[in-house]
Amino acid sequence: MDFPWVYGTVAMVVAYLFGSIPTSVWWGRAFHGIDVREHGSRNAGATNTVRVLGWRAGVPVLLIDVAKGFIPVRLLPNLTELEPDTAPWMWLRVGLAIAAVVGHLYPVFAGFRGGKGVATSFGAVLAIHPGAAGLCVGAFLLVFLLSKYVSLGSLVAAVVFPLAMAFIYHETSAVKVGFGVVLCVMVFYTHRTNIGRLLRGEENRMNLAGRSGPTP
Image 1 (cartoon, rainbow, N blue to C red):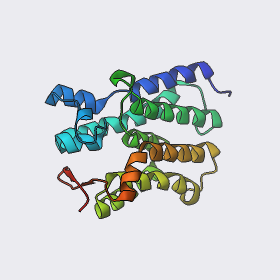
Image 2: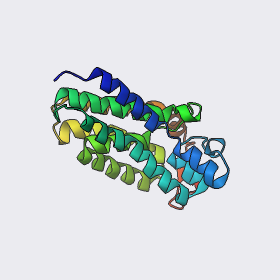
Image 3: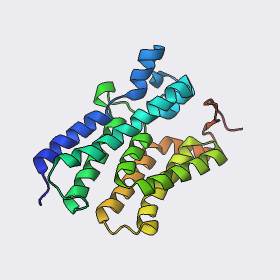
Image 4: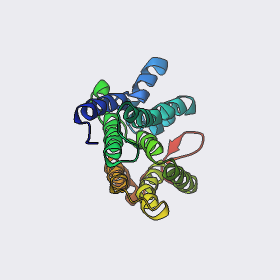
């Protein structure tokens, strides 16, 4: 079956709008009367929410941001007659995943000032390949627990995803592997300032209490 261009376009707009839900911004305004983008790292993501508002705010923000990537990719393809695991099916899922992540990065509901896309990317990865998603979580936790750098853990996890797809799960789908590479590039792009701070030894660490501080 050919790719359903009309439905695919509409579905990707829906995925973008779903990804555009500015969870941390709305949560901060509704329950704390602040915009998290004006505090901490000034980023509209779960990590900065933990820094500014603590884990009680950060955990639900994280879970909702993950859902923003997972739900469109998992559910919207089921509304078509495409056969699972065919090329058109995978192209649709990848398109939905990228649309949701772009929505998180540039949310129409929050002046196009969003987060860095890690949690929403993880949700999309979880929908597409749960096994690789598990390896990404393991890599992130290992690096974070050893270094206390959330950004470094995110970067390593982003690299692990396409490598796991290609060399551990031996995926033959160029669409899936290509998606892994694109997602990795997007994460590195959104973390470009963090990379600079890591190289200069200026990146902030985060302890398990949720507070961040300068590198000793």
